Length: 98
Image (cartoon, rainbow, N blue to C red; front, side, top):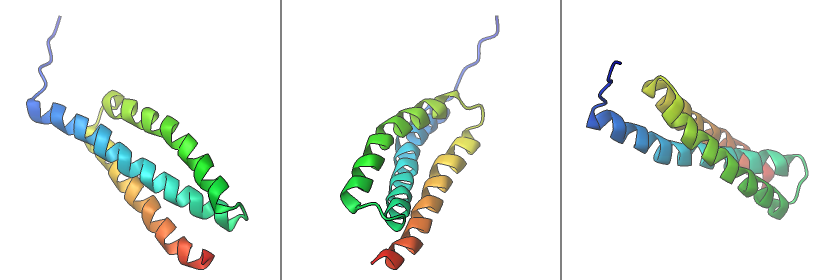
């Protein structure tokens, strides 16, 4: 039986990716989702309620995936990069709704 010892830095990076990266990803998802739903005609209150309910499930999935994924670099790229990309897209879309 082979023992695989993980460095402390690796474990701390996984935890940070799951918490911080997961938060950034969910934030981007919610902001982009609200902007898209509002541009489709849904009222702001209904859009936020819908996306906040989905956010709980999405954060749990992203949190678990951060520990299950083989590549730590991919985890940071998907969670951090994806969250920043979605937030940027929402930021570009929101002024058109005002």
